[in-house]
Length: 216
Image 1 (spheres, rainbow, N blue to C red):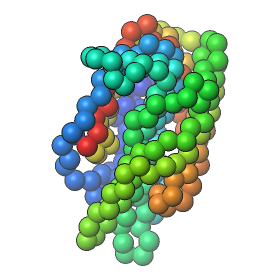
Image 2 (image 1 turned 60 degrees about the horizontal axis):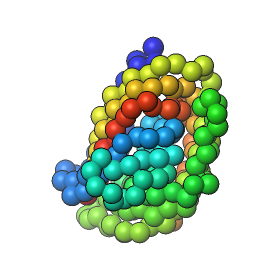
Image 3 (image 1 turned 90 degrees about the horizontal axis):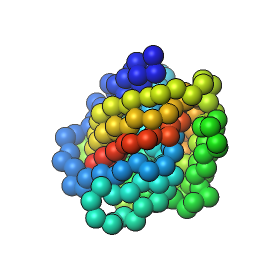
Image 4 (image 1 turned 180 degrees about the vertical axis):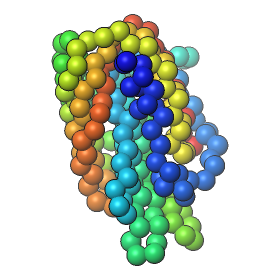
């Protein structure tokens, strides 16, 4: 059952969010070994003229598969997308990145009962609309997530392959996990206003796992 729930979450896609997306070749591919517990949100909602998607993965320790850069430690990988249609204009905004965290920014409680992320990070902010696109690097924002488990611990085997153009995600992990609820707050200037959402999330403590994150 756990695998089925994750498969459904991993395939979650919003057709309108991809409407303005253009094919982009990834210039940077980061591959990490998962060495500590983490928590994940893969969530999307279509609601009238506003579509929102949140992809966030936080881990207590990720280490590069090859080499020593970036140094092992807590990291956050994120992509937040919002589609709005003011009047007859369709605007797609996306904020994404791969950021190191301070140790106190992400905490996972014993037994995976809950986790909390409070991070101020920089990412890339893209705005797509007719007739052109605007890209702003080093766009700073705040991302706060509270995970609370609502199921007991279970053995999990995750294989997630997700494309949120221009970001691509691959996650493979085996270990212990718990399903839960994630309360998400995102505040980034230029994203079209704060985002406050509640959706499904997962807490996990892999015995072995890899995470690959591709960015343009």
